[in-house]
Image (cartoon, rainbow, N blue to C red):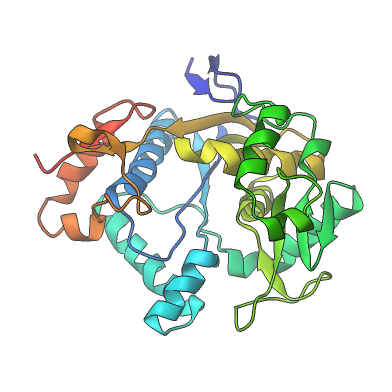
Amino acid sequence: MMKIYNTLTRTKETFKPLEPGKVKMYVCGPTVYNYIHVGNSRSTVAFDTIRRYLEYRGYDVNYVSNFTDVDDKIIRTAKEMKITPVEVAEKFIAAFAEDTQALEVKEATVHPRVMDNIPEIVAFIEVLVEKGFAYESHGDVYYRTEKFEKYGQLSDQSIKDLRVGASERIDEEENRKKESPIDFALWKSAKAEEISWDSPWGPGRPGWHIECSVMATKYLGDTIDIHGGGHDLTFPHHENEIAQSEAKTGHPFANYWMHNGFVTMGESEEKMSKSLGNFVMVHDILKEVDAQVLRFLLASSHYRRPIKFSER
């Protein structure tokens, strides 16, 4: 018997896959606008280890991990590098493969990409609009969050508290477009000279959250066994995935939610993050440190606990 700590219920539960002997597992992958840093690789190594253990226990694991290959950061990087967003994505997907192969991470069963799934994303959003869970506004499409009764369950937050917090962050233009400050974008209308695709709501591109709902259900089915990712994805990303997926399918999205702890930097114990500027690229550190030393560090603590990183 094997037990898994389920973020959704905040308890350890006996693992019972949907189909005996098989595991459907989805893990959120990187946004490919730069090399991965050591904090990003924590999730990659943690879930590779979990996958390998499940296989060791005799399970046939269908392991799906996506690449976010179009978003604001990729578009911004493309402008800075004076190349196309597609070229940015190709460059850093190749770099991700190089770094993770050095860490002996097994390749996913499927590595789906947003750009390859635009028709499925549009069709998914259309169903949410038809069901009243989404609405168009000025060429954007938003999810009607308060219509989903279980919203906040994964992150253990109330709609009321979320509404108060969101109203303090939202800008005036976005506020005019939304029915509620906690509604989130499923489809973003195209800005001048940005990469875009045609849709019933005009040219645009997907929001971040919708892609994982679409690709998880496309490759694994309406309900999956395990959904994994970093602790920072619990809210809003995974909370939004549940809302989108279950509103569309009418079925539970994932039976077990697993989240790995952060990598923190030195004595400050501040989360390693590109936005904070306190990161170390795997691409760089592997020039000085054996890849197995780094993998051992990342696997040396329970996956849910933080790991303190320093040169020492």
